[in-house]
Image (cartoon, rainbow, N blue to C red; front, side):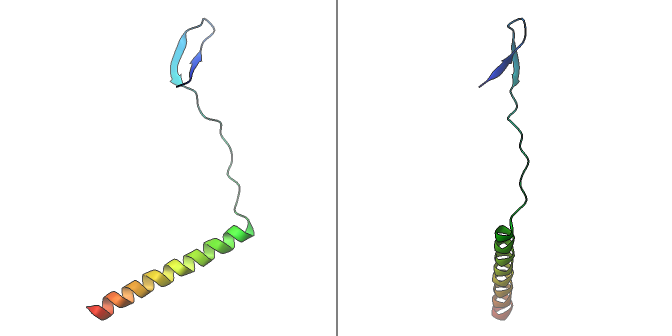
Length: 56
């Protein structure tokens, strides 16, 4: 586990923080895939609810 060292050679017990980066917004292809997956998920949940209501 990496630790930071102070000027006098003392070890700092706090671990080094990882490098930060900014997330990139989704491109049009990813947006289309999110919409398709959302529609499929909605259809699956709707059909499961319809089956549950029809069985009971």
